Image 1 (cartoon, helix red, strand yellow):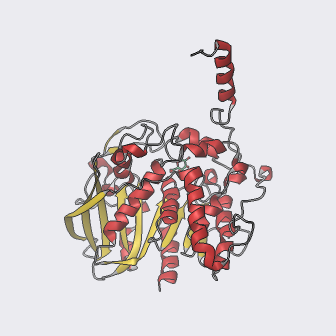
Image 2: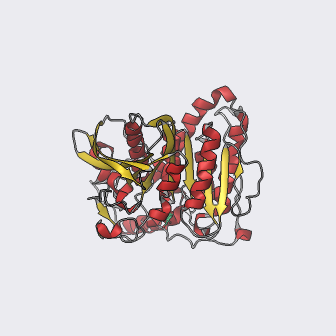
Image 3: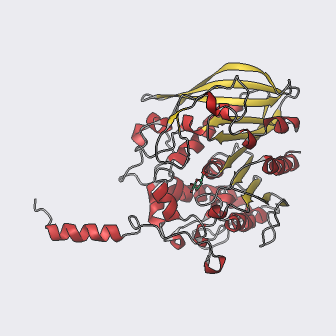
Length: 424
Ligand code: GTR
């Protein structure tokens, strides 16, 4: 066999380094006057150019989910996985107002076994309640200072954006995320909260998918030859569905009223979990930004190129083709939001969270509302986002909170109002 000349190799390498897959991402734009969004891909067009009719939505939705899997999130494995769970602890907290239940959920394939810790907080004096399932960033023991909450044994980072695995969680982390998880207030309004540390499902670093849920399916690893397979966000979303398998068996929970909620990267995850698992009857994305609710074509704040460089393990490899080529994406964030239809979907932003592009987050809900209208509902009807603190919309809801990138009681109050309205 003839080998390539070194010149050909040099040019080949230079060409590929020049390609958008390897180029240094351009700096983020924060100037609204420079935004050129252009046209968004249509949400309601059939392949033959005709318009999707209401009775065709269910099938069309499936196709949109496939487009999103192929080009952004990757497909999850189809192989089966055994699931079992055990209640390992329960007790009262919040002066008897909250019933705490802790489970170990075990996933098993021929290749590996994975233990995931689930904490459920129920209003102690109510039964068959609806509520919220969301992943947490720092361990179940971080969501509340309650001493009974179990500390994760999977790895943890001091700073979730740092590249290194820092430590195993310790007592020091107890309650550090309590402001993000107002459990007592949520229970007082009659809802449950269920949470899992996201690192239990898949540790958040680029290790070639050796650990977490990826180890359960070694024949379904994302690599150069398999560019449409799941990344970590796909893994976290799939994990949320496995937790849903458990929650629907809990007699205290109304399985028809389980919302999936998430903040930031976990907001992207909540949207994808909602898109792929219709058992989530309501979906909430908080400050999810690029790769979540923010329209990619706006190129405002974080971009596809920036996110793929910083977090190469979050999406499927095909997503990298759209680095600095957002206009070539066959979908955009409004597609992701629309796949939740006809279920209620809520998007929230924060005024100081420019990185996540609040206007782009609003607009995905606004454009997705076209689908809700087709199905006989109202979504976000104004092209302009509301003033801070005000919640707007009907089946698609939105608010922007004054302040920084975070998820706080003020946000939860809006989520709970939205859920009450739709779950009546
Ligand atoms: C940032 C990332 C965002 C967002 C955030 C988070 O570094 O650029 O897309 O997901 O992390 O999850 O906290």
